[in-house]
Image: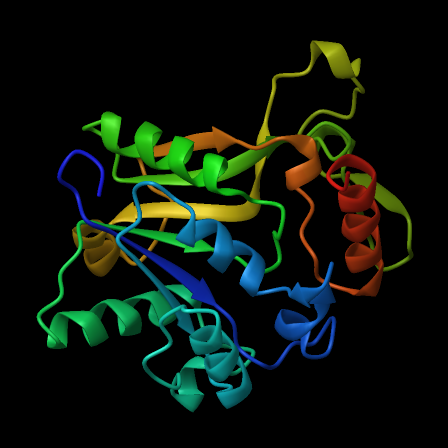
Length: 236
């Protein structure tokens, strides 16, 4: 709890994955990937409940073994490739509300960002709750190498066409700073999420992550890169 606001952390960890088979239970530095954000949430000073939402009995059992709540098996319609994260979130909120457990904020922590730690989580929570006008907060990182000015489309003949209105290149240091959602964490007021079903709106705060923490694991190459980064910068 922070400033009398109850906070629930949700780690979505279904068993299926296209880019990397069984991604969420892949071994990452001696423990399954999904346990990294879950363990970080347990270390948070402000989170009141940590829950894993999964369609896998294996993941549910691993969660419980590590003293993390996993009180249900996620329905099949919320576990396929077309399932939206917001519907998984609403399902979890309603599950606890049906048990007369109510929260003010939900923080979504993705298994694909295992380097997010409890300090990141607590700093993001404080930034969110200290801004009374904010409805949501999302983690971001500057789009330096992938700035929109440098993006192209291919036409039917495979010729490149600039993806922006101007065809003139600008020096990188002269470009307006833009950001991409790095996928590490999202925070929202429960009432807002239930009503608008999104983490991005007119009153969304940006929480800038360190570069090393902004890598998402979606395939084998990503997994290898992030493991190498961890061993280089975190292992003693």
